[in-house]
Image (cartoon, rainbow, N blue to C red; front, side, top):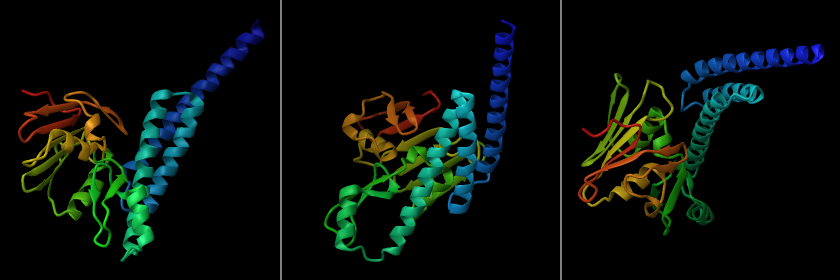
Length: 246
């Protein structure tokens, strides 16, 4: 019995050490990610390595919450690396071949967010986007995306917020803190003629027919609360942890 008690105590001590190491490496990974440069493959790869090392330690420690946070960070960093690689490839293709256009039309383009689509200048078919969802992109990635589309961008530090505006189309991305990898709340104002389903699909990549009014939206980052104001006439869509309606 004494031997069994000693073994149990040793196992408990080993678990405590693993848990402490998990949290130590998680803290170190967070410091690396806070300095992440979203347009730098070197910075992204360094952050990914730090997150992966911490995640492996937390797997051994069987700490579910920490493991899930690190897995989410890994997925977001991996998605940004995929986005950079796809953009670099697109820039190299000044004039896509018919074969490349056929592949894009069939498989989609991972260099632009889900829920969007475009028609290549030299191709007859529309290409759907298969990259990260807008609701899961960092402030830096969102600014790059909307800047390329000539939206007017406005940022605020306290609280952190990004506004992207083009004509009557307006998107407001609110973050908990500067440098956060995804917005806490997204509020979108539809231009005339756009339904709340189409507007929500642009942000989440979820097909309009799969959306239900004021029902949670199942996005890549998990379920997001959905609230729609005046759904039948230039709707306003709120996604995520947004303030309650007054």
